[in-house]
Image (cartoon, rainbow over all chains, first blue to last red; front, side, top):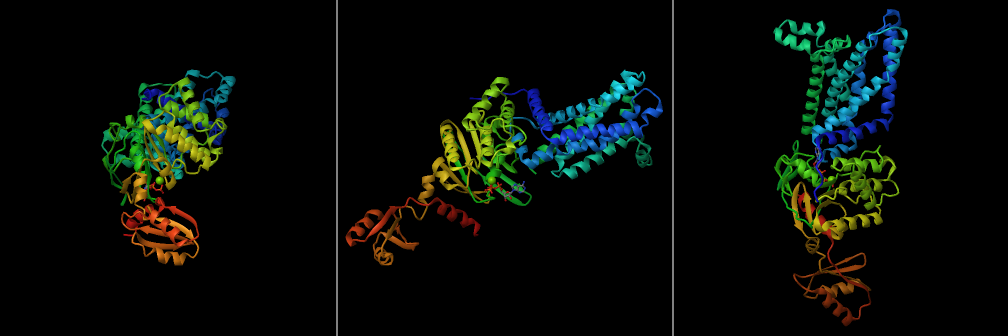
Length: 252
Length: 303
Ligand SMILES: Nc1ncnc2c1ncn2[C@@H]1O[C@H](COP(=O)(O)OP(=O)(O)OP(=O)(O)O)[C@@H](O)[C@H]1O
Ligand SMILES: [Mg+2]
């Protein structure tokens, strides 16, 4: 009378599928996609002076992604755990024979795929640049990959913050602040705070934590393994933190 | 096992200790806030105990939680489910989470829909269902994998009398080879369903007994109630007989409580014949559970 054991990955995929179908049965997904597309259009064509630059690349498009994600990704992430708590389904989910890690990963992957889909829907920008000129499509692909990886980093932070508090607004603000820290950690403004007293080794570490620096490298078309590994590590770190936070305070 | 749980300064469950065997249907009774749900949350691995642990079929709920959860079917309080999903999709999700694949998962979901009479709504989203239907979806989810251990937090809350009856017979049908723990505020449910009842208050176990044993604690146990003309006169006569400890007159009903170990019914029916009272009702009381419940739980609350 024993029930079958499920393998780790199929449990993750099961959670991911459920979550993903949830996105499209509420207006959240559509609203997000529309806002994302409109905003990236506005940033690219007006603020980024896409036409005036007269260059056939997507630099103005990618350049604003970190700032776009800074607010949009926490908006998607804030409901990840808060919503499960509000509806009480967290009790159902975490008493199924699934590990907390599998559930965290499944929910993360669903949101990340969703962000990937939103990103893919910006393809008219890519068509436009190909119509107008002769861009290096390799660099553009690299830009998309970098952008998606960076979104994953933001998302993992947001997911963890959503597990910290059941209040969605607080979760949103916390993740914007933490994401902001990660974005800026390499800039002079932040570095100045540390240069006075911190040892060089620490300075290098902090400078190296910057999303901007790593993303800039990738979006220039230089796919350095270290940049990829950086985003994967940041994401893994925050998902692990997310798992631990949940284990400690799933019922609060 | 022995379980404790504190929330900040509140002791929700205080060294609660019991064991349940296959074939037992254990009913948790207790006033609001007694710690019934908290105990269930600990058994199902949702809450970590502040102290102590428990084993479920040899699986420790802390160190071997996954294995324990695999053999448990759990209906959390309020029967939460994903409102935006259809009943069928939801149950198939649960089936896959329980390790069933593809066609097997679909078969299990369909069987659960069948068992809880959800055939009329499988393609409806759960948020559009009435409260009773939502509860049945929650039950379907809990029994889907034919678990060895069923833990149900207020399973019949919000069901109409027919569905209550259906769910009770469903639980009874499954009870022979399973361990079933339910919590309820409906005392008649304990009598109808459970072969063991525990009364909990303030996180402590007060009584652990069979429903019959509980009823026997009632002061109404073996009392005789009669409806008769001129009750005052009858009452004064009856209070004289040695087998009667006490006579109470309430809302036209006369209740005679027996002295220790006395058999009142024969004595009173003889008296009725002898005096020729015109009696419209004469019954032997089995005992009243609600009265036992109040007596047991208010004893502690009053302190
Ligand atoms: N997350 C929590 N934080 C703080 N206190 C809690 C929490 N959950 C439960 N409690 C407290 O623990 C005690 C037991 O609650 P529990 O839900 O187990 O009661 P119950 O017996 O199920 O009551 P009911 O019959 O109303 O369902 C209550 O005093 C409750 O306020
Ligand atoms: Mg309860």
